[in-house]
Length: 93
Image 1 (cartoon, rainbow, N blue to C red):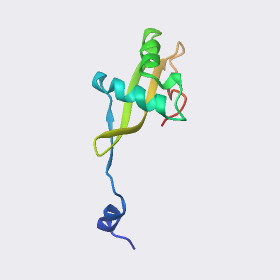
Image 2: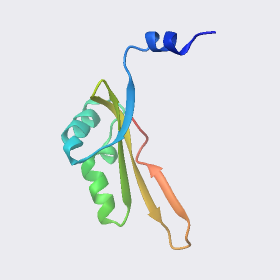
Image 3: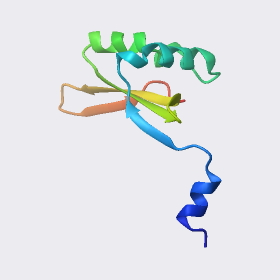
Image 4: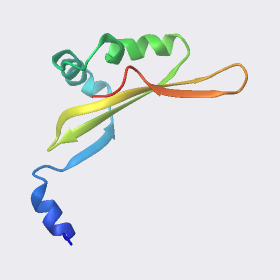
């Protein structure tokens, strides 16, 4: 059986998830534009547009040693019949 300390030795970087702020906007858009999996529906501007439509957005980044390496923007909308919808925009990176 592998101990926790041995797992830490195997993993070269610690990954953390945190909510993105306006300060992260440029890094997020550069990540989206440079990824083959990226699309405009994952951009910061698209999330801003969805907010204008009445959605609540949640932006989360995956960081490795303080560098943004992935993440996801979720949209949340309460529909008329009290059904709640929360989904990522075109997946995640």
